Length: 278
Ligand code: FE
Ligand code: FE
Ligand code: ZN
Image 1 (cartoon, protein in one colour):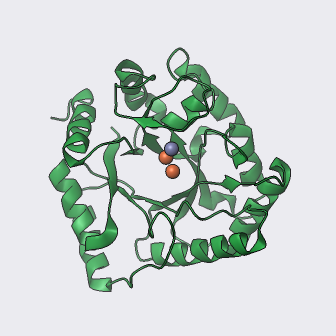
Image 2: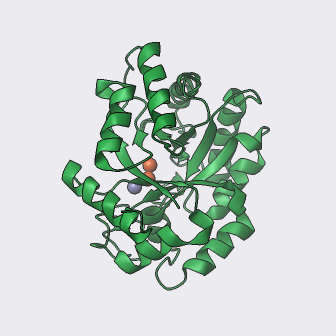
């Protein structure tokens, strides 16, 4: 089986997210560790986090997948932006220690003209500043579409980052189906080939989470416009095949489809039905 859920807002606290997801029928979720456009974070109430942890255990949730801010760019040409990104990363990971054993995903970054090699080196340097063997979080690099100067549009780029990270056992990959498709990996005609290639370049052991999105655009379009399940260019049949594929079993799947609550509830139930769990 896979775990299924969607993004929730942390505005009402941590336990509230767990309860909301249980009401939606899911058993994992994602949240932005801070306002997706940056800014300060509220103080955490330890009792609230304890209540969430009890809920997760009671309801047998899978790993949660926190998402770093979109403004965090560890490989910007601007030193100030890089420094801010490193601060956010450090603070976010400190906060994740309150929820041990979960996942923290972020966009590797955009090199903003410095070149891919330099960008990769800067991302790895930043990770080497914050990762420790004692930490209880696995940090995930998200597969990207590779638009503009975005790093992570190929499996090889993600591998290169991980190769330069000292405590690389703390790093994994979040496989965004819309991004991977848009980057040119054909999940419709050849999902097995894509996954075999992933295994060859990165290794399936590094696959820790999935962002489960259909795409508004064709394979290779490099657009990054998510679509509701079955309503995009990947289509329902291919999405179902991915959800039931052996390599993804046991992983948390996070919907980032353009939906309101009702849409997420429907999509969560669709995924549960595929697995004969309703
Ligand atoms: Fe993302
Ligand atoms: Fe994503
Ligand atoms: Zn996206």
